[in-house]
Image (cartoon, rainbow, N blue to C red; front, side, top):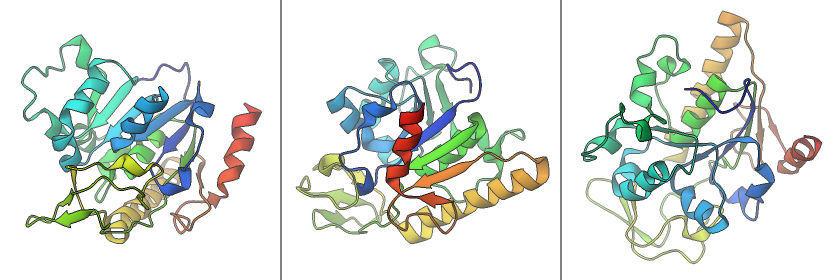
Length: 249
């Protein structure tokens, strides 16, 4: 995947955790940014979109297919990294069509022997975004990856297949930086913060270590978060430190 930048850029990877509440996303204007999943609901409100969009959650892709299609067709981002599950019912999708040539699929990258993704086992959209940043960037800054999910909020019910259904739009959602990240009728996977999300970040740290030892190529990765977050696996600094970087550039 190519970028609009002349050389490998410094990248800001944006999670959706509550630690980013009131964060000024427009302060990232002109930076290379990666955003994930249903955060497009907030981007639409503030008229700001990241450089790249990542979503590899099959349940979210299926149940929000139309919104994600519109992101692509309206060229809101430079590129999109998705799961192939989104095109199962997308009748006119054709990668040969110019309007879809900015779309890439995780499944293709995982079988590419020259991609870092060939080493992926456990993953979530956030860790995939982080690995994508490692693949295309010179330095990676992580924000909003709290990994402290309330697994079952009061406004959801668990269905027989294990997925969760939002029955009322939360007035206050403890898991995300804006409260209507999830809205009535949304279907989604149980977060599984400890068993899936944290494990995927741990495995990302293994890939980073392998790449450094195997190829002598180390890309600085820093997680900015005031919570414990993924500090066990990735160097972590206070969130306020990110503003020094933004103000110095």
